[in-house]
Image (cartoon, rainbow, N blue to C red; front, side, top):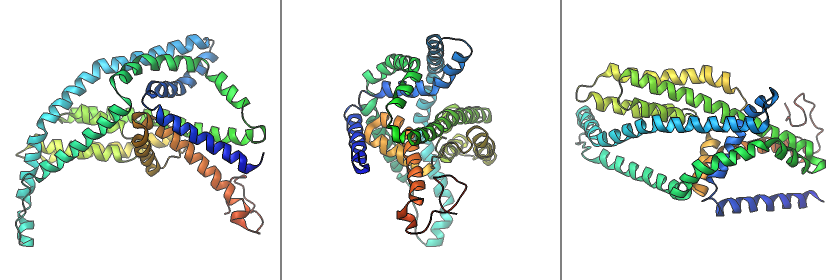
Length: 367
């Protein structure tokens, strides 16, 4: 079979997969979540199996513990976070009015400088209303695309079952897939899949641990500092810290705004500085200790490509697409780097020049 025909078959297969994913996106949430859970728990099951515990018992133990931990988190944390969210929504109008007044008081010098009266009356309120309307539309889209009531119920019922059966047969499924690989290209495909697995493991496992550590730190530090809604803002900032700088910057902006509203009308600048310092310290610890120690260079996902994947897959496939965005971005990144390495060794790049001698292996480019 020629290379062109092989590429045509692969292109048809990928197109068919995307079409099926798009058509069935409304029912795929519990199955995709179960696959991700099985992938995350497979190393733990392998370790338990090596110490003598049977695969079925190891799978039942870790899936059961995972469901128990998740349920306890919902029971204890969700009501508290929900209460803080409701209080925050109730206090937003007063906080906006206070910030508008402060800006107008501080903006008198600017009015004198440009010779024209500046008024913010109602403008920030309108901007916030538009922003909240946009967020509401986003959540409504996610809900209708993958989080309908039936989807939520199936998420708690079907996901553990899917994760259990996939985890029990994980090694057998991997072996079967390996036997189906084209024999001429099996070694190359194994290397690509290994690189994708390393990138995904670095992100889904290690980055998740970093996000949990940061979320706990922000929540505890902001609460001890006396910030209202510190628990809600801290956990939210930590959970979205998988996008570099986005979580800390968003959390800092929200926290400083809440701190201003909390101390209004007498602004406590020391309190605001302490709140900002909490996020600066968290970013320094993440960049200099957590990420290098826990993640290292194994992720290989550029922040811009990650954000694009989240937006694109979320827009196309709803909440299911957001779950698939990271694996897809990791796979595309690995394939693109492999293709670039092959291109740098091909005649399309080199022309009639001899291939350069380098120590980087067959995928390395010229120095």
